[in-house]
Length: 225
Ligand SMILES: Nc1ncnc2c1ncn2[C@@H]1O[C@H](COP(=O)(O)OP(=O)(O)OP(=O)(O)O)[C@@H](O)[C@H]1O
Image 1 (cartoon, rainbow, N blue to C red):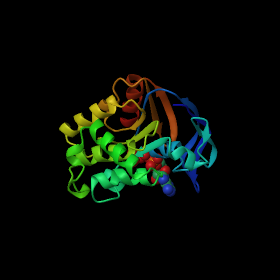
Image 2 (image 1 turned 180 degrees about the horizontal axis):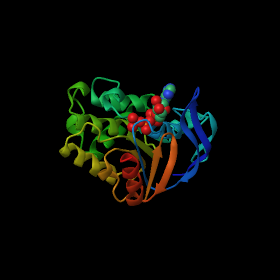
Image 3 (image 1 turned 60 degrees about the vertical axis):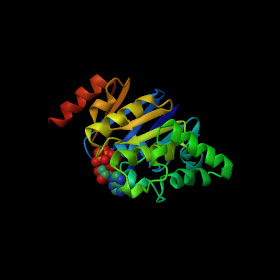
Image 4 (image 1 turned 90 degrees about the horizontal axis):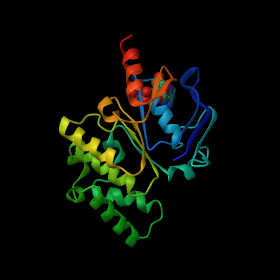
């Protein structure tokens, strides 16, 4: 993974959602923390071109996110609410949908769907209706749908939000075990323990870029002000 922010920032009218950031991300696991509204999601959306920079550039694996189509295939994004991410009623069909829209042939789709279900021990969810699933099951289904398409980089926006302790543990284990590079936005600080790089945002500014321990200390300091 090679992500470069070159003075990239985002404004909406007079509101600065993210002040210009210059950095390079190459680590396997990157955490992102900060108070509500501090710019975390804006930063993450710049990486797969869902949000365009108002100034500067973002280059992902050598490609400018201004050409979002190129980047979208490299970067999978799991949104805060997986119920909004799963489009088709049945889990198996939803996993197949992303593959169809990328032009895979039916036989390839079938084998990729089976492979991802096996990979995450999620075969029992394949024929379930998404709206009947628990929060943890939905998170697992969303992960299958996104990873079936083979992105190199995965962005997870608050993956343990709304989960009970058991499902939280399940998702912690899943995220830790991913061979893909992952950028994880989380208020669940335990999830980020041990990350070699954690970015802290505050009021639209990147205010710390450090190992998990140091970054979490800075975040606690900000939160207690
Ligand atoms: N499309 C938009 N139009 C106007 N303002 C926006 C838009 N998207 C984000 N913002 C503003 O930019 C700021 C940063 O938002 P962002 O979603 O990046 O925060 P966040 O740190 O992810 O917050 P949370 O933890 O609450 O999800 C907020 O003040 C938000 O209101």
